[in-house]
Length: 128
Image 1 (cartoon, one colour):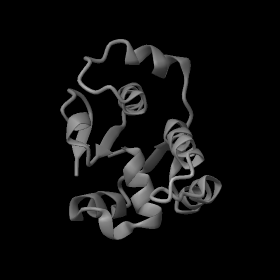
Image 2: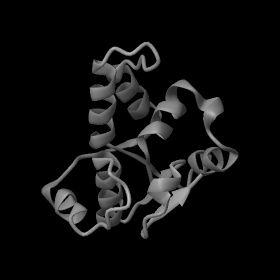
Image 3: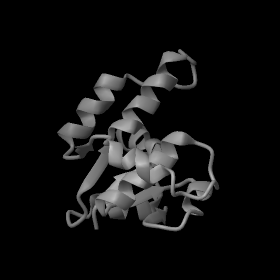
Image 4: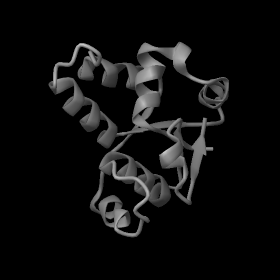
């Protein structure tokens, strides 16, 4: 199964792996499951890091490098991905999450998330 990880899972995988559920770890450690991250997630993290909140101290270039070093594949955002967002029901207002789901749908990926709201969408989503 080709897995696209939601933004929070990417952060946890690199900086707080103990926050990942057993199910998430099993999926992510299974070599049969190629792991992907979206440039949209990197953008979202960069925006949040730019607020300089003490509860969100992420070095974005370092996170990006760690993902690549650990074998994650980078997924660019295309116009086709953005067009697919139009067809999603309005269950979740987070534009980054909606884009991740659209990417998963267009690229034959399974979006992996711990977000129950996001997991309520129909489509290739797996809540962990």
